[in-house]
Length: 326
Image (cartoon, rainbow, N blue to C red; front, side, top):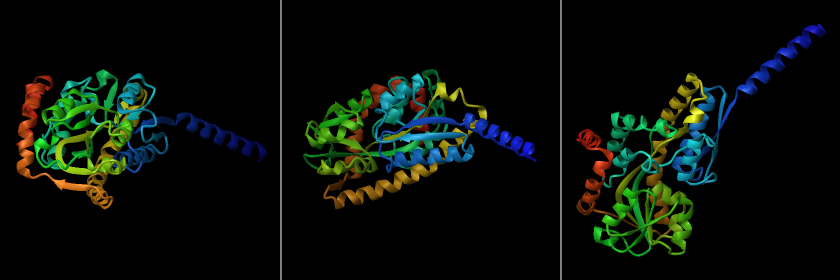
């Protein structure tokens, strides 16, 4: 009996040791706080991956830029030192110019148009460009429509942008859009944004309502204008170096989880956009809606930006997006 018990104990120990050895761990770098729409999407993704893999793949999120800004962590993915991140697609435009199409100002009128383009052939075509750069794109999530905040005055017409020092990311199309609207672009990473606004290094910035609220920018900004001047899509990325070590079954689990988390994350993003607006108004922020006529004037003002960047993204891709929007 003692021999049999010892044998069973040995087999159990070997099994546990084998299971522990098989666990795949990964770091997920997240720019925004855990409660943001981005953070909640990542938490859902990690939960789904663990569930679908029966605990074989464990992903640990690092929120609030703990591992660096989007540019830094995307580079770390390429180097294989971090396994996942979820930047806005704009971060990729330096390596894949075709992604600039998603940053054309006033391209989408609503979320339904954005979903159609991102979840269709255009989105798939863009994903195929990433493995050559050491990255694997998993899906498209929502950051949302960008609205303008500033400390000078409400923005009700395009002329109200004139002269504002406006935060920009390190992407030429974003900087050219800000210039076309009449403001002066100042490149800044997200972790630097609050302090720059608080110290009046810059006058304003443009991000979705949920991000403005998550970063508590209402504490350092007086006016929020619903300009919807751009649409931001998040793209969950995996390091190709890490991806290639996964089995086909594990890769499918990760991909399926990103797709499933997409539905949840977009719902959270859209709900947070509405609730964030209400919350910021209660904090004393002055909020104004831009009329359709004035938004169309803004759209006309940035048409030179469309013409400037169409050769970069390719006329065929531009035409494909326009046809899908029709």
